[in-house]
Image (tube, rainbow, N blue to C red; front, side, top):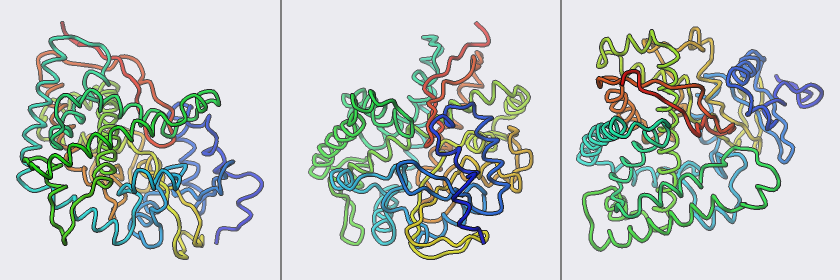
Length: 417
């Protein structure tokens, strides 16, 4: 059994609680996670402004916690810090912060809305949007990849799928950036005082916008996801205005941010590993699925999610008790040496590749996993198989977030004129 004394003296997990840790180069952070994986059991991470948490850093640990939602609960929140009660009361609970019947009912409504017809239309749209983006890139020759390419694809696809009118989209893109720019990023006191509610205001405006669209679609439904969600009849229930707003915020902030970051890291990985890029180009359809999954494993767009222990449970010799906080470090689990040989290598033929980039299984496995894979595959097909190749230039500008592997910007260039 892990001894309580682990909380005192030299805490092997203390480094993870220091804001400067997340500003270090990726190799430094990955080495720290490797040391934590070598510990005998879950490692305690003290937090200056909170109770501290137990770090789950091994693949098996993250999977076990993910598949025991009655023990490792998502409520009251999966982010660090957890959302305040007044924020939850104002905006409603996001699906990722719900457990049990409440989560199951909401997920059922959303899953039913993703009909085969809607998904088929979304996949066709993904290919059209990817081709149009690359057409624009070749015509305009921009030099910054995130804004010109990686952000556009998921944003346009989700807006098309939801049925968001064109005149709202520029504002939504701006709101998404404001809502997510400081998640998990340590800011100075002046910045916190100057813009304490900027992200929340952006979320509020997005939710009011989509609530208005939802009211219109209840009266005049069309063939889009908002209509399907607000007109659904799953056990007599559809999404109300607050639920629709919370789902839209989750879809935009999570769906857009995670996919754009995976795409951006993917271009960097292919540039840094020309042998893997050449292999992918030798038979794109043969290797593309493996390449996409390896990009997701290697970059792990979501670094961690938080859980609260709801029932006593023993894992790797440590007894978790109700009220304990744990954090599932997907970024560490995806480099677990016992599961992924040579885990720091980028190998598009890696098989098996049971990465946890979409979660560790269980009821909170990412609903958008399939569409994210389709988006990445479609975009890289267009980027790599056109006559003019692209490559990353320099290192990506990382946000230094402890929540997601966010890229602020990445310079890129054309290999041929």
